[in-house]
Each structure stands twice: as C-alpha cells, then as structure tokens.
Length: 215
Image (cartoon, rainbow, N blue to C red; front, side, top):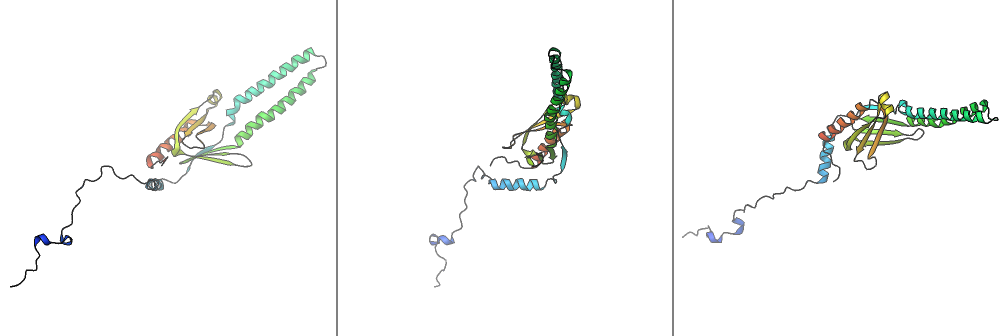
C-alpha cells in the first residue's frame, strides 16, 4: 500500500498558510506635510515665474519740498521786516546794516534748507521690480534696503496740499518684513501708478506661488 504524502489539514504548517490581509481602516488624518516639502514646492513654483524685471524707478521730486521752501522764504521776509522796524527806532542801525544782515541770513539758511533738500533727493533712489522694492540711501556710501513684494500686506497713498498742486504723492507700504515693516516712497510723480503696480504684483506673486511666512 502506497503512503499518501499529503499531510492532514489540521497539521498544515504556519509557513504554508495564506497570508493574512490587514483589513483595519486607514487613518482618518493624513500625515502632516514636511516643511521642507513645502519649501521645495514654493521654489518650484517660483522657478516657473517670469524673470525679474524693472517696473519703475525714480526719486523724490523737488516740488515735494515747495511748501518747506515757501515757509523758509516767508521767514526771511519776516526777519527783514523786523530788522527794518528796528532800524527805524535805533539811530545806529541803518538800512545798510539791515541789508547785509538779511543777505547773511538768506545765504546761511539757504545752505541749510536748500542744501538739505538737495542732499535728500540725491541720496535716495527708489527702484521697483516685478518681485522687489529697492530703496538706495546715501551719497558716498550706499545702503540698499529691499522688500519682497510677496510680503506686502497693505499699500496706502498720501498727498499733502503741495503734492496735490503738483500731481505728486507718497506711497506707504506695510509688509511682514521684520526689518522694514513700514516703508515710504516719498513725493514721487504718478503715485497712483506706482501703488497699483505694487498691489498688482503682490497679488500675482501670492497667487502664483506657495507663500510660506512661518514654518
């Protein structure tokens, strides 16, 4: 009689048993995305953007200081009138003295007022690109501050009476930048155009990329 090589069903080894299928439900909460993956996604999105190009550049207009110059001239006139009144009451104080005192006051204060305005205009240059706002300060030495437009939260425009007369304005920028949270592009021509360019570029950058402020 030939022996049956097939072992009994109750003696089948564990190795010969079919694998068990894990039927436990999948976790309801997906795993959190690693911050490094978020940064890589942001970099990939920014790589697809158009190259950075210049949108606008300029300086503060001299007309922005017209009010300051007018106050200075009025102060000189008031000083001349006061000195003339003193000359009429003091015999030793002649009109010639009044003339030279007014000339000295005019020149000394003019260097301080006009010179300060000139250095302020020459020492500050604004440049707006499709991604950043640059503010360059200084004449002999230069300091360049730059603010990413994607960090801009609010754009405001302010016009003084003098600015309204000459079509000027100051654009104020509020951003999440820790070093330059508030910036001003002061006394420029076409402020509406610059403010709208900053606002539209900020929206475009935030729409076309993954904006990550804090990880």
